[in-house]
Length: 100
Image (cartoon, rainbow, N blue to C red; front, top):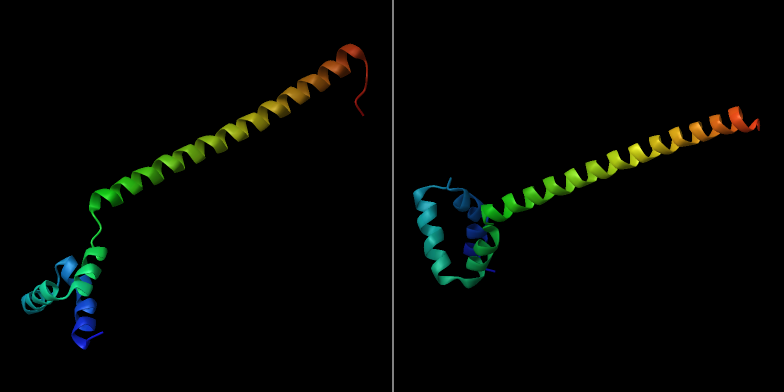
């Protein structure tokens, strides 16, 4: 790898963010026209914002599903406990069998 390529690759994040100097921007753009390796690196660094937003939406949906499953699990445990207590009370009161 050429030293110039190393410098360009170091500058690419600044170029992508639009915070490099005009001189650096011109140097990078000129280099990218003639160097396919650096151009591929540049293209790999660019991520469309809509794909990031889509991933964030998917994460929100999955978190919502997880939260709902946890709530349902807690409700089922509480329902089971209440049912067991009612059944124990019925056995104790009406049949006369002591569970202990």
